[in-house]
Image (cartoon, rainbow, N blue to C red; front, top):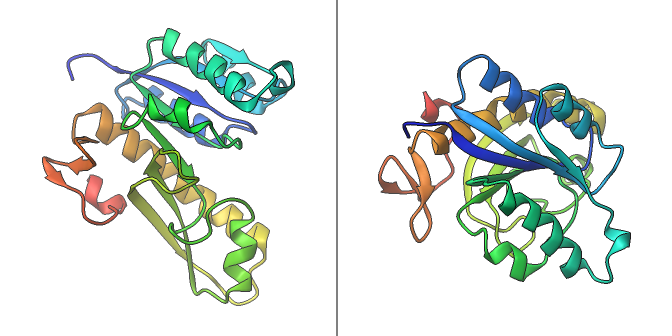
Length: 216
């Protein structure tokens, strides 16, 4: 692209993945322009991070809406109004109405702390340990109506060490998430990764998830 990709992000928590995207942008490694950061939590740390970076923010309370679909339509409407070309779910902890998601197919990605299709949903580190896995990781996938079920485009992996706790895994994995998400967003911004009836990387249909080395 000859101009920065217009990106919006949704987050429910502290916003560390958002901070990683902002840092990559500020370092000149990510040709994007943030149009909006939104949250379903008024006190989400992501909103403070965005405001400090001069990015417009919006917080909306799901309890102010009669149904989940009405809330999702309102919040995603604000995203659309911002002019975003790509939506990044960076720790956004709500299941989104299928009809709302459908309008963003191929234009929305999510980062999830497991090696999908393993461990969709919550408590991924605990489930990894309970299963006795020797490997854990994070996935970035295009968002569809199926919870954590859209096509996976990239993954980062870490070993599970004897004696690891959930916190140990979470801490080590977050370092990799902070590399993986900017790499994927950068590939989209530079036209290398996109959606043409499914994920395409460098002009070829993506048959398996990429890893960090594939973006170099």
